[in-house]
Length: 109
Image (cartoon, rainbow, N blue to C red; front, side):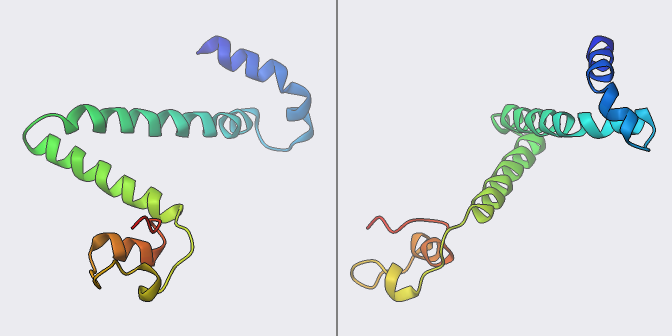
């Protein structure tokens, strides 16, 4: 960890001299994306680990994974469609049709 901080400080020292922020703040700002990515990865790993277990920790981990999946799908949603465009043959309306209308699922039927 010390080597990483030292290398970061040495390689970015010319850029740091131009800014008016303290060096510790600049180093923190430079490391923030990596730290956030590491935190997200560890959270995902722990949720997947506990999701396979029984009990309250397993239930909470499964709920977290489900809500995370829903947030990712909503963030990457496509174009919203009308009910007429998404309805299944025989006028069947189910969760797949609802997701198609919201733009989360492609029409595959």
